[in-house]
Length: 106
Image (cartoon, rainbow, N blue to C red; front, side, top):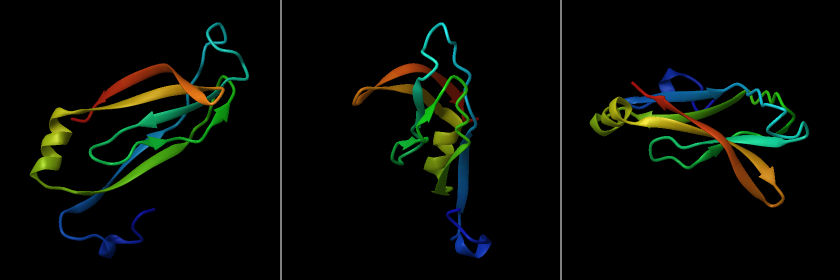
């Protein structure tokens, strides 16, 4: 966790966590030994990636945690933007997009 207790937060600060639990992949679309990971971008933070997992039912159980300053700009972002999660598979030294979903932040 980024903060041990409430006293670690400054005025207007809070935590936002995005949990990525898992996926179920179609064996007719990818091989059973596929290695996948999830990428997500939030606000003005660096891209976060889940661990690499192998198989058709990866259990990522991954949390991206962001310490945020809750101000007018952040609230406008939360009320008007979306969060996109991208499921990728590794392919040699590169990756290939398998699917994505877009979540409203409202």
